[in-house]
Amino acid sequence: MTPRTTFNHELEELNKEITEMANVAKTAIERAVQMIADMDLSLREEVREMDRRLYELNERIDKHCLDIIALHSPVAGDLRLISACLKMVEDLNRFGRYAWDIAQIVDDFEEGKAFKKFESLRTMACLVVGLVDDAVYSFLQRDAEKASHLHERDDAVDALYDSIFREILTYMMEDPHKITMGIDLILVARYMERVADHACNIGEYVYHMVTGERLDPKARVGNVPQNVEACDRLFDHPCPRTELDEK
Amino acid sequence: MTTTIHTEDLNVYFERNHALIDVTMDIQNNQVTAVIGPSGCGKSTFIRCINRMNDLIPGCVVKGKVLVDGEDVNDDKVDVVDVRRRIGMVFQKPNPFPKSIYENVAYAPRLHGVTEVVDGKVRRRKHTKKELDEIVERSLRRAALWEEVKDRLDKSGMSLSGGQQQRLCIARTLSIDPEIILFDEPCSALDPIATSKIEDLLVDLKKDYTVIIVTHSMQQAARISDRTAFFYLGKMIEMGDTKQIFERPQMELTEQYITGRMG
Image (cartoon, rainbow over all chains, first blue to last red):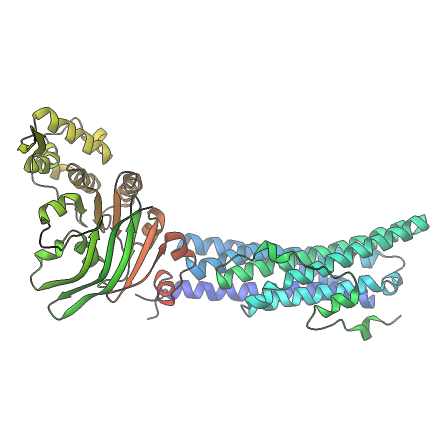
């Protein structure tokens, strides 16, 4: 009989749950971004359902982790896995929350076409989906190398956010009638920027889970790309411009 | 942190059984060092080398060095009685003498007597009653037992509970003021409350003594030790700070053992 059969079974179950949650969270962000790209309002309910599901999974996994700690006293790699799961569920849950926030804004948006015209925002959405995708992938594949590079790409997203913020601010100053629309656009950009931050958090947990080392905060300091082209170069899979460029 | 004990290429044979293989390690002053590993891996054999308890086992051969403060305890010139006075030991099962609580603690000081220098000559004499009373009280206090037994010192040590008996054995060890104390699974016969008291005591004792504990409970090692050594099949596989061993072991075998997947 393999030692610690019950414990191993619990870990397998936990892994299934967190994998499901990661996939739902990733899909929720993808759907929200799709709403921006295609103005496909039919996705609204799907995003809402995924947000609810993520909340349920957050509660369930959180409890499951505490049960495992209380009953099985995990150490070393097992403890790092559970610690990562406990923290990750919060970030994955936030993915759902932000996806739903974005969906609501897009749905309420009177001049939805403005999203399509706003190139930088759609580029940012694309970059964020790539980041979320890789954060989830790095966890599922236990890929510390990939996890360690997410921060560099988050810096690119942050730079884009700053740029978008300044641009929208200018529009709003020029024409007060665009303030409502401008605030909505800024909020969407802000939510996506936060999603990228949460994806980076996941990268940190994955790195620690796999290697036992903490990511060096100094490693984050580097050249921040200031334009979209430079941002694109940081990604393994560049933005599918053909879909997004439709006007 | 200075090194108290240094072993070098330590090998132990029980006739044909090679029980300990090339163990080289440092144990530092005023720390609790835990030795963990599956049954039969050589943990007890290792700590018994430190105060030469293995000498008592027929057919046992010890090779290599065990330096305590730079002196090899296996050297022919070393007085083994003095080694065991300096390096006390507490065993798995509480084993008080069938005597009163007072006599259990006073027994060793009475046996060793007091060595003092008078007019340039080394002289041994018996303890006075007052000196013995002081030693008994001090040792029982240090073992966190005084308050529980001070009104019944004349009662048999065997009348105490298991946890109290174990603390009495610790007081007995402390009575001759050792430098190092070896604990061979001191809590395995105790309930959780008694275990917790002994664990608190061990952590407190490291201020004055160097403590080495063999334990089967990995959680106990994690709770009380500063450094942990993992033994497997007679070899020391890994030694490091306890936090490192339990959070980020370097060796795959250690990870497998502490996560319960082997052993």
